Length: 136
Image 1 (cartoon, rainbow, N blue to C red):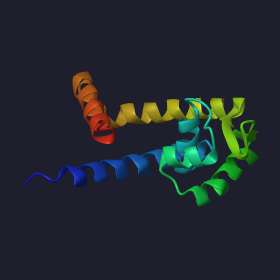
Image 2 (image 1 turned 120 degrees about the vertical axis):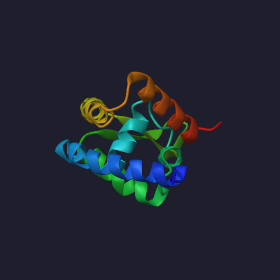
Image 3 (image 1 turned 90 degrees about the vertical axis):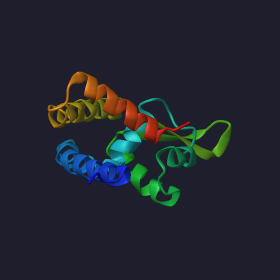
Image 4 (image 1 turned 135 degrees about the horizontal axis):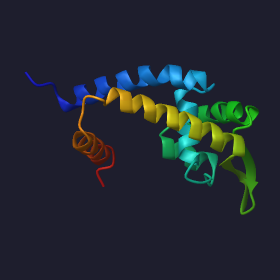
């Protein structure tokens, strides 16, 4: 009997998260901190609210998450010149470096986990998951 797609995706997500946890911990990050660094790696967030929306994270809990990243020297928050109530969030040079190192380690882990699949199967898996995650 074939499992539902949702159950398969949930199981795969759990397995990946468990495999990634030690990688993240070795770099001094939690999964959510890595998610923030990944979101900011494409450019600054116009505000903390925009960042919370981008990563689908509770805006009231984001402040503590950003406090920790800022204390670690990985992000900065500065008033938006156009709206002094808003804070523009950016990666620091240390944040860029940390994100790159963690991303590389996670890519190595993914390659080991996908070792039983051909290159074409890997491309198809990634394309299918990207389609499911971003149906628009």
